[in-house]
Amino acid sequence: MRIRYRLMLAAAVALTVSLLAVVLWPTSSVPPVVSEAPVAAASVASVGSAPVPVPVPEKAAARTRAEPVLASSEAQATVVALRPGDVAPEPEVEGASSQENDEIAPELPQTAQWRLEKTTHITALLGRDVERLEREREEAESRGDDRRSAQLQTLLIRDRARLHELREELQELSEAAKQESSAE
Image (cartoon, rainbow, N blue to C red):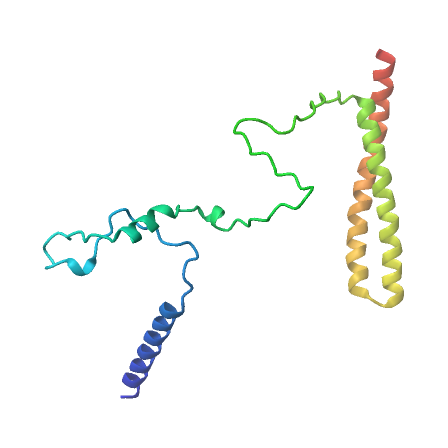
């Protein structure tokens, strides 16, 4: 018996919520599109017959034709009056570029010397990062922040391993750069 009442109560609550949602649902800000020949729904005599068009007064027909249907982006446009000294923007022309872009420079050859310089720069940056992480880890240990200290230690291990790989790569690249310069 109690289950029946609970089910009826749940159904009533669901019906109430759905009705409130329909009534309180926000309406569209874009006006509905009005057709050229509106048809009155009340003029239908029976369910099986075709709808009969009802004549529309001239003022209403002229008003619906005079108002253009705007796209959603045009409907939200803001018009600002020009002040003295303002220049109105020129209309855009399809297919024409308003700005000429600079030529893209061809990519430089990635020689051994170029790779050596890039790797040297990356190694220097990573070395500074390792020093900064070491200072931060020492500060975290002095504050007693073991969790942050462990995080920094993990980062240090990774960065030191990468720094070691880069230094080995630097040695190989310096030899390749020497061979490349002696070949020229």
